[in-house]
Length: 234
Image 1: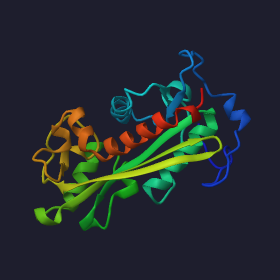
Image 2 (image 1 turned 135 degrees about the vertical axis):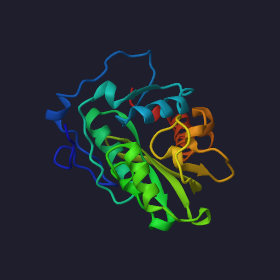
Image 3 (image 1 turned 120 degrees about the vertical axis):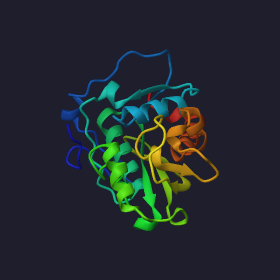
């Protein structure tokens, strides 16, 4: 089921109104863990869920995903920036479920390609393998000094009244000529962060999270959640 402006009306500054007919169809998890607050991670991406779960593991809040509370919720990415998409997803998820929602949008920007694929990173081609192959073909013959790129992550946290906070982080690096490693997802096998000799996909998840764009952004988000736990939904 898709959420649009017709189902959940919001702006960046103003409050959003819950769409009652949709809420009636949302499967909410009703089991409570004492008085623990709940934070919804607004993603259906299983790879991203694994990374986020590790980054938020030490928080004293109950973390759920869309798969837990709204498995049929489809939030389109229509923004022109990572930050706009993160806001849209966080607000739509919060409106649809009534929970405090955390959403991110992330992707790869290649300097010599004028920032492509950017916000279209996931839609650049149908599969990870095809996306990597397409990008490597576009960079064929481009020397190492000009193969600079950056991973970017924007995170937004919202409740049904609006955006609570936002964070953005990047990691700089170069794109290798061949894919290496099998530990990551997306463009990880061809992204070598500055100062590293391995690609993101040749690192363990712990090593990757220590330096990655998403790792840095979610550590900031986790710190904010710890400080503002009282603002979260029960």
